[in-house]
Image 1: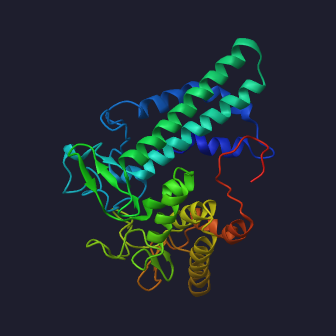
Image 2: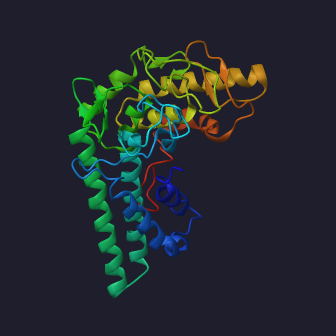
Image 3: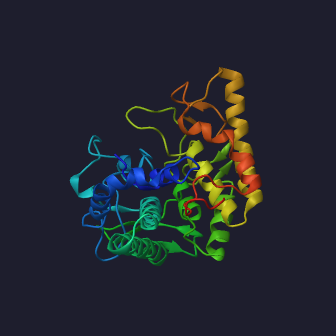
Length: 315
């Protein structure tokens, strides 16, 4: 189970106009423990300070090509593959968890005085430092200017993983790169091998494992199909760095794909073929497909509903 998005989701709820940050204070010890868990080996590679997934299924991108084998239920699995994958998604998500914790701590400090307020501010400083360290490790260890994106890393074999997937959009989304890096990532994403007529591919069409198989059992397919959540995340990241035209073009293609599916089948599906737009898997799917409802207007107005900001600060 992916537990790398709890604190940021809580902050987005708490910082909403009717949110109550104080309601989440009771969970502080549990969240401190969870973040500490991700900071210990084997989650943390002590040589690089990168963080690792247990297996590919844990990331939510079930059979993504960043891993040789999805998980222990696969015939290709060996225990030596556990905790070997360090990729931009896990580091980005954890960086945002620490930022969200800092925002909560700063908010709680406003409601306290004396030692209690100081303790919250100290926690905020500690978690902001942890967020900065993760961003530094991401860019120091995984950024490849020659390729125009952050690669992944096998921490056991000390070997790069050069496969090109939707994950390269994560650092944009979290604001962890500079303008030059953002431009390189945008250039990579708009190449035909990544950008299809229906949106961004989950895996580059140049990858030998690329396919658009209609598969959900035992794994949902992240080796080619378009996934709305990955496209929305990347579009918001591109927009953040001023690549508005590309962000809106991606959103238009994704929105048109879902509109066509609704006309043809009266429902949505979990993913879509980037070869011909065919709807794949899970008819009647809603979940993150609903992100298209306000994706275009948000991009046009510059709003990012997932941005982590102090409470009361407008988008």
